[in-house]
Length: 110
Length: 113
Image (cartoon, rainbow over all chains, first blue to last red; front, side, top):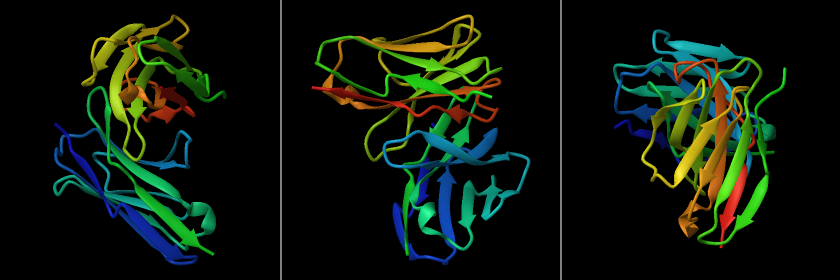
């Protein structure tokens, strides 16, 4: 059974600081690793998807890395802004489903 | 391109009742998956439908059932509601199984009293 862990559970930083969010998973037999953003009480917005054959993926200020052999992925958000405040979830994919971590709740202070 | 939509947005039911939640998949997507997200936790996989057939199921009891229609929209039915069923229910659509990127709807907040 895939176990996905996200550390830390919560993070508070001043505006402009870079964010580093960690995700670990126990089973390396994954199709891909997907990062999502969730605002309070809302659905999930896909941020980045890294295929199992890739090492990293970038979109604007976001960069995600994947190390399948060690079961780790990291999401970097450069030059954080108050609008980045949200919960960030990672999910590993297997045949029929995504397995999610509990998320990291980020607060960016103006 | 229309995204994934879900209805209703919020729902309050009494323990023991039955509920039906609806999901319209993104245009061109033939696969729908349902997830349950309790407060403060990550979403948990309920089941997946591909071309109207159940294609995988998580650790949920049989009182959680679903349907997918020829237009690839989907329903989640929950019978004999329990207090622990209170959660945000999310559906996701994709072009195939979970190896494809999943696109999520806004969710339905179910409260069971």
